[in-house]
Length: 275
Image (cartoon, rainbow, N blue to C red; front, side, top):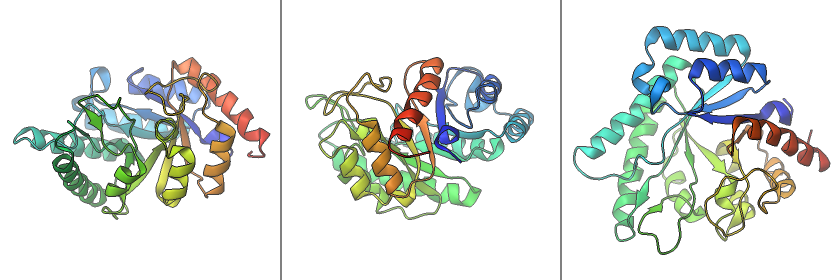
């Protein structure tokens, strides 16, 4: 499969599932990422008949479907009752993925409030361990994403935004149902950069690489390639040389922006010999 075919689109909440699959087929997009949190695609709308019909559409059109949980749901929650709800939310995504035939579910490590980082990390680790065991039992795959940094003086900070924090979970969860989603623009925001992440992480565990542009050591933005200063040629060179053969997911701007960005990124990769 060439890079054009390997480059997918994060549709998120932009379209109902049925329309998203039709749109992907029309535009020769083989990988799509969807969120099931609200509206026509909310988890409680995925009935068995609807799921069967959607699965058949994906199979007919050769669409690889993935799901993406909300980073606003705190996987590091430890409050009584609320933590139980987070477990139920994540299990709901696993159950939906099985019904839909989705091939991956992107999850997050949660966030902390500066003074409670150790307690939050432990709570998140235990929740992700439970989730990995549940996904393994159900035949699903979850991908832990490296998230973005927040300003230093912010009260709330995402977890797993540095190599050290990401590895805290990676090294402790060895289930075959637990893999990684590597967001290069998030890596570009911290001193390690894309280079440091690729050097430190076992890339054989990375199933997806998420792509947007931003500014080095800057703040969280999802810009079109070329609107920031991320070196995409170097990114492709390092990631492909590390043996990555999974899919890329464009996650910036509108659907049209992401389609145009696919063409731009394929040209960048071709300039360094990647077909």
